[in-house]
Image 1 (cartoon, rainbow, N blue to C red):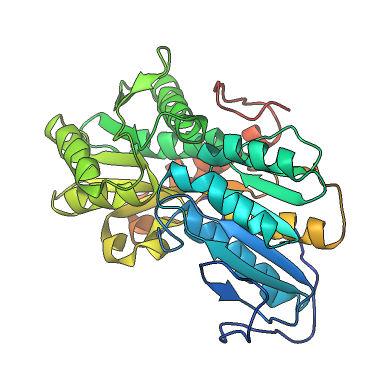
Image 2 (cartoon, rainbow, N blue to C red):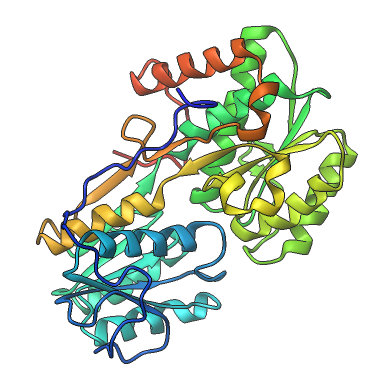
Length: 363
């Protein structure tokens, strides 16, 4: 094991080639006619078109991870070309998806569970075209669904937080109250509860009530000032470890943590130490879900003419979710706690621990 609990591994091997085509090089003129950026060779015969949620492909979270997955698939296969359209609000979902379908994209990928209804609507209008959705399950014959049991990784994050807190209070808050967010919060609270049970402690979770399924949210994924305000409030109440589940809004929380000595953060989706290096000094760990690898699997499946209605669920077992390394905090995490986290991971993978969350993928 490298520093901390196991790293996320790539969950599938994409088609390999001896040479990489278009790796970061400006593409030649493309048949893609809409707005947005492109990646790869215009001579490729298969085009993947991604539609982002608000926040853009540089959001340090799910949009960026999705686009990185598209680029990784292209790097591995010269037969694939990629482009994306940016959504600035939910009003852009359907127009962007429909425009991508009208461009005859071979695979149209919607990033984010908020886009599920729009994907279902547009995919229903283009039954012969392939679509995919990140963070949701759409039951249509031409939609490939990608979901993540992030309660598993956040369970480990919650256990870690309970084992590291000095004040006996930790906090979690979200961007919007949707399943892709609350599943992290459920897992985090369950992990804290497990630590309390094992060690006879009474660490309190602020910001989320599992029984009531109610807690603190900014109401969006772009208001960093709201994220800072929420975090400051929890710090004022004594929380010394913060777990925001809010994409780029989490950076507002990170700024508040950085200004508060003795407080640390557990990031979400990607490894925060690497994704937002300006805040690496406060990153205890991250509850990750490997959207990039899942997108690569979806593209590989479509390129190989696999099932149009395929489904991927990321878990600790297949490497789709995981707890990031402790990086600069590695020396501060007791060896016994590291061993407990490793044992818990094994119990979850083997099915001896099942984390209850209404938002968990239904298999």
